[in-house]
Length: 383
Ligand code: GMT
Image (cartoon, rainbow, N blue to C red; front, side):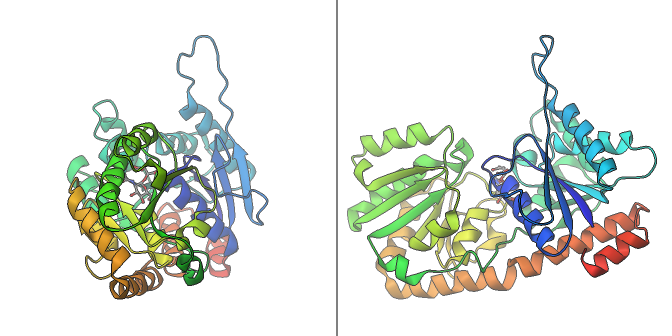
């Protein structure tokens, strides 16, 4: 198949999932065209089967806000025509699905179906904002197919927007050959707790610092903060105020977290809400047990006490207790690390999830009446 993928190319789970999906699809013989304003991180455009088309957003004195949504729609239509795309798959509803809808309208000689994947704050924060509610609802209703990444998100979308159309849950996935344990690396150096995020308020990064201060009373550990965003400054200040700054390392944005994670002993994800928690899944694949909050779609992923822990949002004491347990009880750590890896392998590995996307693409093309012989045979041949 020929698939156009649009996502936010910056650091953030939805862009990462979109990029990894595109790479996996290309690996399975599909032709994948990324259409975005920048090359998505983690995407090597030189990969066979991968193409990258930049969206140029011209400025003009009259435009206080350059209309990216329109420039994206034009580019989508152009790429779809020139490269005979079978469908568009957009990640994060706003504004991508509206651009896809416009592109669909612009192509008059055939129907170009589009699928929207809802990732989290596009529904829980942006979608609930008064100014975006109606357009988010409209974009979901007008998509030819809608997927989301957890049962929580499906239910939340249906309940909040009153959506009647079916929404398919296709969980996030991890490449278990790339994300894997490295016992030797873990043994080297001190006990380490990792946090990875884009440091937005929803991630509650200062809870990592507070919990770590409690852990430090018991264990000579180090906290590794990977990523960047608006709450990095407040987190750095708090570490200094609590007198633990020399044990906290702020790494900034990381390109190869699959090399970083296996060196860690636990992952801390204290988010206010989390539609799925991709960072937790990547950690689990590396045999690093997560301590997360019982929020949103996290229970789709973690079985409390088996392959990780879930505590209440804001319960820094409770989270610190779990982190300390993992750092001090080696039998517990071993058991949970194995269970976490096993969960990743048995439920969320790419080999299990990518075929679900392929099957859904086929369904949507057939339902839109665009599934011609070549599309169907491409599916069968995986090309
Ligand atoms: O962080 C976000 O809210 C937006 C989104 C993103 O683009 O980074 O993250 C969401 O999508 C990830 C990938 O599907 C999920 O693993 C995250 O749980 C989800 N984040 C939130 O819901 C806060």
